[in-house]
Length: 156
Image 1 (cartoon, rainbow, N blue to C red):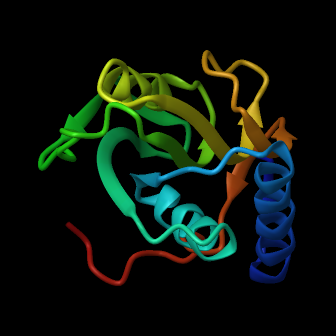
Image 2: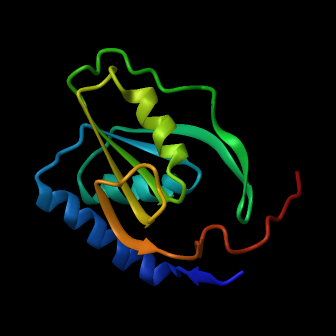
């Protein structure tokens, strides 16, 4: 399978660009919601760049391998507690919107519980069912990210 490789130096450039596009839009999130695991890197980087210290995590299981996924995304516990956030502006952060089904599930979880939801991803595929509000690059191929390019040291 032909892949696009993202290295750490390019990641830094990409994150600066993504954060700048959010800042330029005037959107000031109260919370950044990371979609684990790839979104953890994006959320942390955006948190520093946008001066947002309130970061939360949602664990979503969907991909089981390269190009292999479950029938539907599965939201794993513990789910974030979203009470008293009816006016909050939430930025969902993930590494890629491939099919968009994971982001769709996370957005549905937030709907009606927060004031406003926007999505930021480094990459978006054209076939994504969820268009990102902020994206660094449109992708055509499978992306090899620097945090997942090496084989796991432990097999589970």
